[in-house]
Length: 460
Image 1 (cartoon, rainbow, N blue to C red):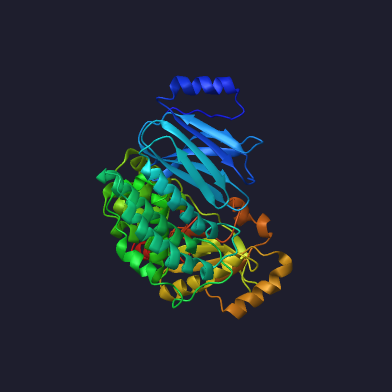
Image 2 (cartoon, rainbow, N blue to C red):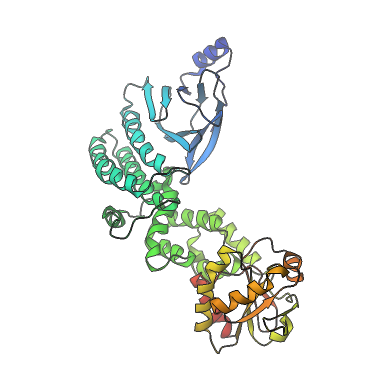
């Protein structure tokens, strides 16, 4: 792909000469923006494996103008991204031949003019994109709109419009028609499911959730790698598995297991797994339980390299001796790490002021009940400040915390924190019966794969 970063402050004669000399081969885009943007830079993207890949940029002039001149390697979707105070605006064009485009852009959408006489695709996309913008404006950080606004928009305007647009798709090229139809459907699925990713001031009950979510579940099929030609293809897949895997309690295990079960096309599955394993930053033990049994699904070279890195990482900490600390329990009795030898140790570093730590407590208590009487110690070490020692003791009593409860001396300066370079809590660690490290960044109690790991360790 040849890329050119172009500012419209170019000397007019240079611009004119360049266009005249090369207009037969290049795409020329000229745009006028009619609202203020927080970022003066506009970016041009192509789609690569279901995601946006930047290929150029342009600065907006004082008069609100910008442009691009580039030579596309292939026919496909190209996207222009503008950023304002609340969100990003992504303008989409389907380009397959040289020509000129003029864009007139405001906050509600954009208008398009093209010198390509047969460019019915972009006329349709422009009209459709402006409808999608209505959903995107609600699905943006800082939006104060809720399901009260979003559900009627999708049900009463977007879905009926989608059905009408699908009837208009008739380019004379069956393959292109399929791609445009997939684009329209994917936009609706993506935004409808993306709604659940954003924080809202109020949340719908199950009864208030529209039936179209169940309809979508039955409509979507992950059997066509053409989905990777759409910028939101992989994102829609992620939104889909995030939403529908919550039925039995969301976890990384349920998320990936749903994907492994439902994605039928091997190329789609490979790209989805590669992207999501990277995004989740899986721990080595999560990889061992969730991904390793399915590593044959990683078929591309980049995916195979990722698997190799995990294989190396999973062995990097194993077998090192755990730090031998000694701290006091609520009764003032000293307990050392080495005194727990002979049992598996699941260590929780936490504090009473830590919200995420407290959220894990019910899951931790459930694990303690399930493994009661077995060779495993659930050890919790508080790094509260010394002034909160009594608060810690009261918290343990009120919450009826089990396991072994200890109070570290020195809080963030304690030997435990310093030795393992702990920068944030909760932090969970796992040690074998000989006190050797299995993981210094273990899975949280809320992750269902942890129970599988502990069960397997007890068999050894």
